Amino acid sequence: MKTGSIISYILAAIAIILSFLFILGSFGDTGQAWWLIVGIIGLLIGFALIFAGVRLAAKAKAAGDTVYNVNLDLPGSIQMDTMKCLSCGAPLSSKDITMVNGAPVVTCPNCGTTYNLTEDPKW
Image 1 (tube, one colour):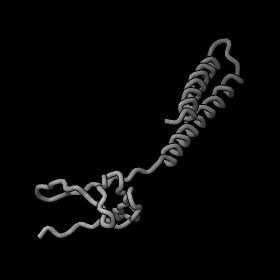
Image 2 (cartoon, rainbow, N blue to C red):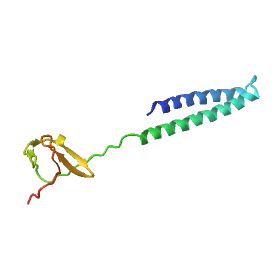
Image 3 (cartoon, helix red, strand yellow):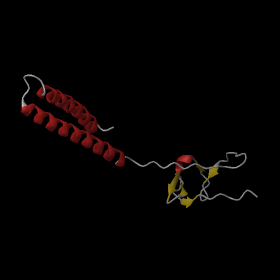
Image 4 (cartoon, helix red, strand yellow):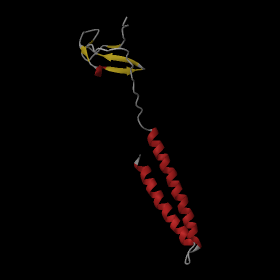
């Protein structure tokens, strides 16, 4: 949660509690009519602060980074092979593979060659 929304919720709770006290006090023996008005205004302020807190929390969620996870379902037993650059033969690691427009792209750290990663058929 964002700090602004937490502060808004705390202030709303304080405003609502004090408003109820004003409303209850207005009906007592020494209560005055303007206490009821102050209580109602305080309730409106409290609910407005709750609304603002919800909006701030929603905005914080919308502004967050989007994370995409790519899961591969590999059939059968898989063995790790060493990947080598097609141009210079240098070994490649998983750090050299990036996703560009939904396709895996390999960039060789040795020669700088960039090409799409393709899988050869297993049959």
